[in-house]
Length: 239
Ligand SMILES: C[S@@+](CC[C@H](N)C(=O)[O-])C[C@H]1O[C@@H](n2cnc3c(N)ncnc32)[C@H](O)[C@@H]1O
Image 1: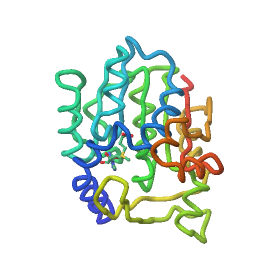
Image 2 (image 1 turned 60 degrees about the horizontal axis):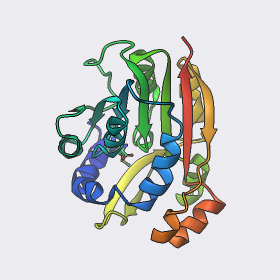
Image 3 (image 1 turned 180 degrees about the vertical axis):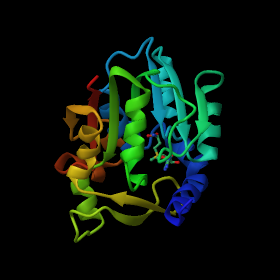
């Protein structure tokens, strides 16, 4: 593993239990990312869904409760342990780095792939998106949430919009300060890997927080109503 990836894994190993403890109600997840990203999915009952970079399995918990069959993976062994713990005997979770081929999963075995708030941890998306394409059935649905490229550009004070850059910041929202590395990129580099690898973009949403967000964090509620921090994308496998 390269050194930035090592740092990302170490950060999530350190964060995992705190993340799990906060994930049900942490406003950016519970009242901003999840409602908007889940709204991109059609009816999930009876569908097979791959939850890529599943974290502690909160999305999986919701999808399982709605009657989906869920397989999830994450690069952090602690996150995978927590996802199993949260979901009991339901779902199938394993450790995997999605910059590598998903050799354990068959071609065309999923109706949908969900990947929430995780692609910015991978410098080059091409293997990941190719694998999402391979495991999806024909006309399968890929739903992504990512950090909004315009938000990242200003937040990280970038001066090179067109580059893919390693950036880092200290997260304090999960109860302990942890340095988190990621890769910011221009909008074109978020959509290009999808359209270059057999998907068309079906829907793009610049989300707004739900009203409940304001009860937990009025300052960010106001900010997110003025400028988006995340971007939700629905892409369809062409054939
Ligand atoms: C912000 S969390 C999102 C978790 C979950 N999708 C959610 O929204 O609740 C990002 C997750 O991406 C995982 N991750 C980071 N790099 C990864 C990689 N290369 N392969 C798989 N998972 C990765 C982290 O371990 C972490 O669990």
